[in-house]
Image 1 (spheres, rainbow, N blue to C red):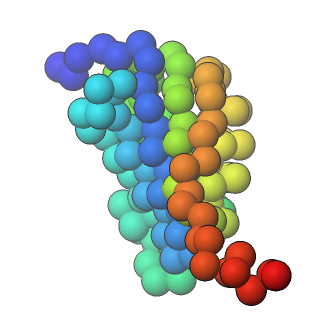
Image 2 (tube, helix red, strand yellow; image 1 turned 135 degrees about the vertical axis):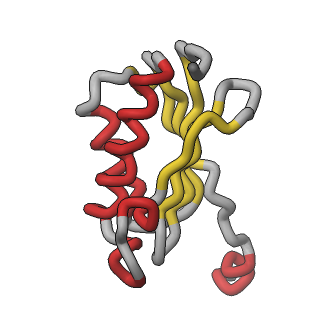
Length: 114
């Protein structure tokens, strides 16, 4: 039986082509993960918000098994799936404590503004 975890962290890696969700405990140990590919989506369909929503729903089921009641969400990337993941979580009954965007920002374009 998996150990019970009250609070966890969800890492959302959202690219144009895919959305990968990794659930870890607060120490960074992976508890579960999901992606549209694990739900049967192939090719360009993996990057859609709907695919990300279904991947998130399957991960929410795992969170319930683990006893997760609240989450800290970190988002990396600018793909379409990130908003649907957050919206799916908000409707799940699991408390979202914080959403942090950790997407690296390119600074190379700033030099051309002056």
